[in-house]
Image (cartoon, rainbow, N blue to C red; front, side, top):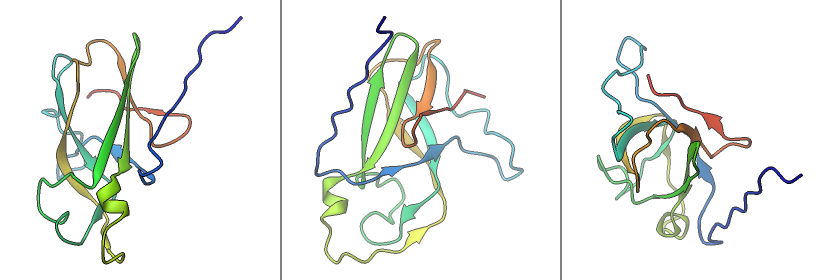
Length: 129
């Protein structure tokens, strides 16, 4: 019996997947204002961020292309390097070791579905705090 089949079609022009997670307070505790189940914008932090122009400007997420998959029980967000970032000139660009929070816009509310970071395989659940 076939329980499920996922086909991931990703543009060959997109770069590698970038991990994300929930923002934390200076104390290291989860930020309680991150999101709600009825939100269509969530705020996430990144383990890395380009240190070159124009992406080193606060709020410039154009180096990322979100690939968001919606199922009845899950929302999987896979953030990939954008075509513009992959094809940048000059090629060298240092990386900050953390950045955020930055917005990710969902096409529909999360609801009671589980949110997953699709940058790793298998995807990692990112429960709301």
